[in-house]
Image (cartoon, rainbow, N blue to C red; front, side, top):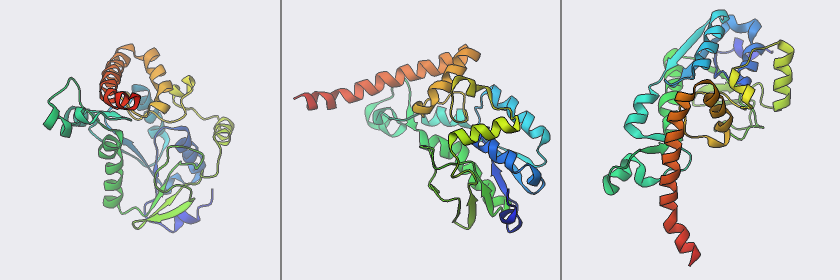
Length: 247
């Protein structure tokens, strides 16, 4: 990997999620890791397999920082994250509709509070001017940096060295390196598992929940109960719209 960008910046950071793409970045950077801080934004409810995996990464990475959020407390205060949120089941909605069995919130709010905001705070506090990320333009879940390999935003340069890589290319590189990947990929997961109890990102989360069902059935039962309540609440909210459309 070309080290030119690293040499021109203060305190380069690799955001490492335990996903296959950030792992590929880590391995590409291996000869240069003495210059890079590997940062794991742990939202506060990591899967035990992720914790164990991060421990193994930490054991050989020279500079490793763990940022810890408080997702369980955030959920208690604001509700469970959801892709489609019943408004009357949010904290704001309760003011007019009364308290239901469970609250829900937009998943972006939960991720921002417990993962993305701590990352930004770390960057501002550390004075880092270069962030390396595993984002690829072939993914359908991407941040606002989108398709640029190198882009500057708010005084920080973001470098996405895998931007042009296909999913197959990432896997081929990891196999060539003999890399260990987290176990939820065995179930067909396509991205990292940030929180064991995530009830959002359902188009990506099914395989990770399948791993949770097999590895920790008691925890899976908690998530399943919340998803059942969410489905019921969504059905209740959509019925008036469906009746109008049927007329």
